[in-house]
Image 1: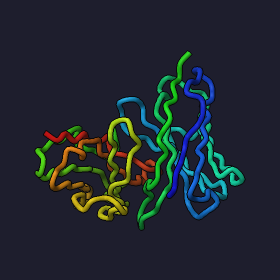
Image 2 (image 1 turned 60 degrees about the horizontal axis):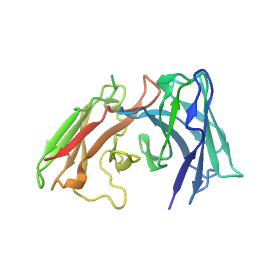
Image 3 (image 1 turned 30 degrees about the vertical axis):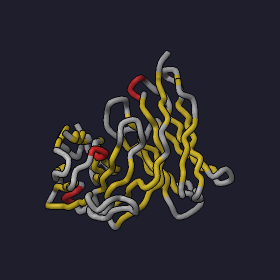
Length: 121
Length: 111
């Protein structure tokens, strides 16, 4: 059973950097899978942030690309998100997930429980 | 404004059938990128419900089904149950935006 667990500060100051880690169990981040981050502002819909492969290859949402960096730590079986220059608009529940692929696009088959990050002074 | 358009809300009585539409364009659904559906019970993480338009992950009841027509996709739920009350999201890939896109979500109320 694949399980993912997000962790990181729940409060980030404006203009600071949001940093989250996703610990994976029941699967290896070093496998032929992509791993993704998604966020959901309070009371709103889902937004794809991007995905990372074990080789370090990444795909980012173009609207966030200039501020986001993913990394992967095979020794700890986890992957991470850094989002720079945050504002109140970045306040959201952040989810990590595993990516599955159908013939013509990816989907998210296992999700973490999510962690709320609030941007506020 | 989401790239994929869903109705904000739908409702139905227990036992009835409801459908939720997901309308896209020539750069996503119309470009034959697959559509996937998620169920999100308030306060919990989304759960994969349908992938590749019509496939159900293990454990998802066959009361849930997906379909596609042109630049739209639909999720149908038959034999509506109280536990189906949740938000539902469609998701695909968009070649113009060069990334994954979600619908705005549909709140299902079981009357």
